Length: 352
Image (tube, rainbow, N blue to C red):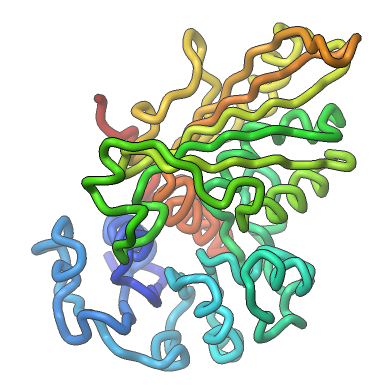
């Protein structure tokens, strides 16, 4: 039976693009009909993604945005930050629905974009009101009604899921300290000194401490959800993993009780298809690696520096390429096409 929708992937040769294609090849309702890239033009998709050997006859095509989008119901962009924005005016004119994995349309303030992405935005008039931020756990109904979705960053997704129940209850305010550990695939397919295996495999190192580009995205999202005067102090850490993110967030909450907060988290996420609160353990990367699932959990201790307050340690784990990237983009794609958001995303992964 023919599939109902046609999709194009632009920027299909990277890690995120490969995961988009893999999920679309498994999709019962959406056909990946076209893959555009500046690399591997004319070569089969397996030239960049060996796991796709024999799964499709598609080849990488060197296409303009308009040609890539022609006749498509939806276009998914796996392009780098600052590149995606230059393609967007042409794509918006195509009439296709769009899900963008880059950071170019997540922020609403052009000045904040320039501060963290170190460039003027090429179409700042599109930052407010054009794209819906694609975190289904917060914006599901808005995504369903949207034509254009800005899919969240990997660290942003993980930290937001860790803290969202506190924000929605009005319990999140002031300083929040976060340490986030990430796998090397989050840096993209192009090798660098920081992702070179002999260094990465035996090392832990921080980068962009207190200055990561996901900071304003997280603050914007959590304050929209109900946080007040949030001051996010975020230190990312490179880990010897190829996939996975694990974050520990320290929030300071007045008169917090573990049983009440745990009940809050379980209730908040009880109907979310891709967020789990483990029953007898805390979140861990191996439980979500290779999947679109996220795990969250908490621990509560006394705050000796602020009488009457508790320190709530909020933990979360995701796969940075799936729930932190392409899988979440497919989840939003399903919603904007009026489909079950779980399609092609429910596989539980392997263990260990």
